[in-house]
Length: 405
Length: 156
Image 1 (tube, one colour):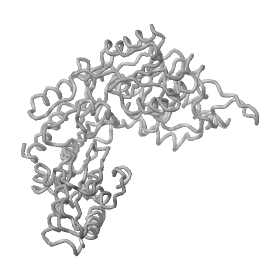
Image 2 (tube, rainbow over the protein chains, first blue to last red):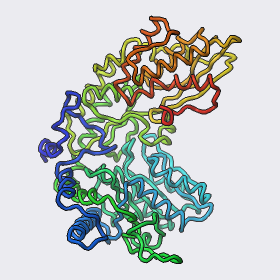
Image 3 (cartoon, one colour):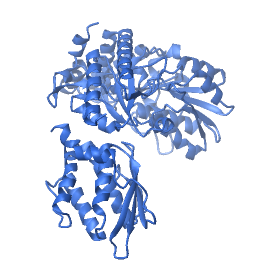
């Protein structure tokens, strides 16, 4: 695999960022976009634009077909049984809100319990928190171990007779831990518990096979998968999507509307109210094709090599403390430096064109547990090289120099 | 702009060894502030005497070098100033950090202005302005006794 050639497919790397070459280590936040994706958005608006699923004119039919093509591509890519198990949303956040809201409306009863983990991003906690008040349900937290992992045993320990849903991340955006989702699902299903997976970090970096994972719901963020912003995907098993009530009401999701009754559309329309992110959906087909052309196994191997290399570098850099040391780890390196606040680190690294994230990464529960207000995070994508991590390390050294460490 | 203009020696020094990082005994006003995005937090303690002059001001909290240095320099500077002067200086400082090229306050000595201008580098880093202004907003909140926790996500 030729990374230099792959990197050339991303126009942003031709730009100088404050006179520096860009060292982009913030892909866990959002990935950069290959030219094919950018061009597809432009082409659609320039030559093919129409709203989908409504009018019968030529452009509308053509756009609808393109839109549905992406649904079929996603179904194939994640190995879903049915294309109607793929729902487009405005983001993974909306996908998780959709699941929490509809299960809250129709499935959960007072005093039911939901099990999440201390690793969860706020978008896999806050939507469930809404149900604490409206439904009087309880949220339990599986605890992270010293290596920043959640074990199957810990999940098993926290399941009670009242647990109705387990909602977990596939890959932690802070410690990088990859959770044993398949094993957790098998355990949960043996007890009649629904499994929801926040796949924001899993989808861009791991091989996805819904039949193998077995989970009931899986939320995807397209902009982290070399795709456009404003788009997410909810995979849901057909029986659930058929059984659960609609999430938002409006055009496109109805069957018949009368003054005294309303009936709802079939899947997937039932969950796609209003004009959707049409151009983004159509362009996302190119993101999937891009990932397939590189090969997800190649991506996984490349990123695993990078993380091992980066971990080694940072471990040898005294005063840098890595957060978590999971055995099964994705492309995330979170760290602190004794004596320098993460925001100072990020600002100083930025001066060298090194883009990282600093803060709590929408994981306040985890940072409270670790007893730190914030951390710095470098995360990798397919376009990163070992030279990027060398630059990270040397910019960290510059940072230490400025702070007289 | 060079990063060293933001992280000047005086800022690094105040960030490392903040002045007045303690709790004023018998304080009569206080307020808390936090910057949830960064994880900076500050608790300002203020003691005004009978003439409404700052007898002592101190703070507790944690944060980045910019926010700690800003709180340190601010608390040092405010001692002995009258309440109205404090408010005027805070407004002048916030104006300078946001748009004004320099400080205009008549309540500041030249050397005080020079010290405060060390924080002006933050202007070039819009995401970091909140770090520099957190303790200043919180001081006003303490004076006004608003009892509301300053949150930089709400108040820039």
